Length: 473
Image (cartoon, rainbow, N blue to C red; front, side, top):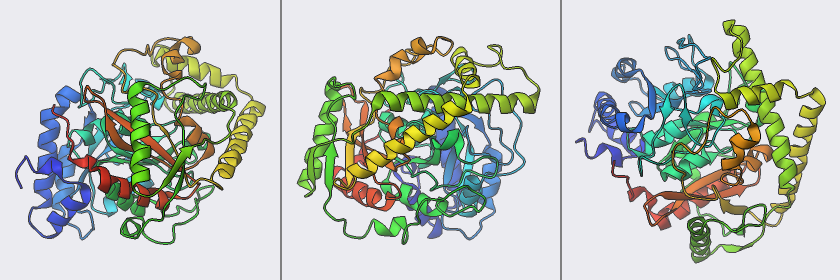
């Protein structure tokens, strides 16, 4: 396999070539490393390299379904032995972990080889990947634009063909937003679907989940088969699937009833390119025999934003305080970005009553969406209200939270609600702007309905054939 062929393959195709001995696992890893070395100086997607350890793992040749397939790990949540996890923050020491997280252990057990860690905004707070510690990750479709966040480094690396898929997390859109910005598949799983242990669970007070960004639906399904097994000790699990997510992609999908959102939550119109993306997606669904009409869950968006930000601030304060106690540092703008420090201070002032109110408010919103799904199988909405923003728009040192978040309040109003309700949602790359930037659309399903969502996504993938589109870097 030549250098030119490698980035055209998804993880399952690469695994099949290795299993048939058409290439070796070491050749696959060397191709990934070569692309990383060539492209990362432009993208700044990879912030920690563990290439020699990756070569050793590939050469070990275990009998495993994905043996030799390379991946990258987000610099949050995915603890990996021998690698630091710094959360994009100077406050976090560059200290290698002495054990793997559950997700990383399951990747390794399947033969998947982590090459290193990917760029994130500090503490994963923003929907763009720009931090003072690492600098900005750059979008392979246009280097002046954002990769989205907070899994922006992972998404840039996958879109650039460095790896076929990469670990990602999603606490307010952090899988779906980078998938949208980079022309990828981004599945946010149901709350409780993928274990987050052993060092944490129920991250960000139940808002955050782990999975991947990928180029194909089938890779996302295959990896969910690896991840979606209970880890006893977790506080809860999502309802189990009856069988393999990957196998379900080959079964006939039923015709669905889909509600569609064509305006911002405040009633204002969408950006023309996003509106075009939604209407194109609706027409594609109708051409495949699905029923689409304008309809949205009845949600109090103002209340949901207040509840979400209460939990987000409390979760940030918990994370910063944990670091302070572990390292002996005092939280300040010497070690934290101004925006993070302000959110931390806000979190310190949140009472147990406020936190409980916020959680109960989001639980009630989940009941509203459950009622919506009694009529509609899926909800179609934008991922973002505009195409990928340019880098440098957000000031990470702004300590006035209202000013800090002003540029993104209307930019990302659709994804965080789904973290609050705990449902699965997927971003699919169904549109590109006239300037060549990807615009994803979001489909949301009832809690624990990843199988239906993936079957539907696979049908759209076959009709739209998006994986043939590649950025020129």
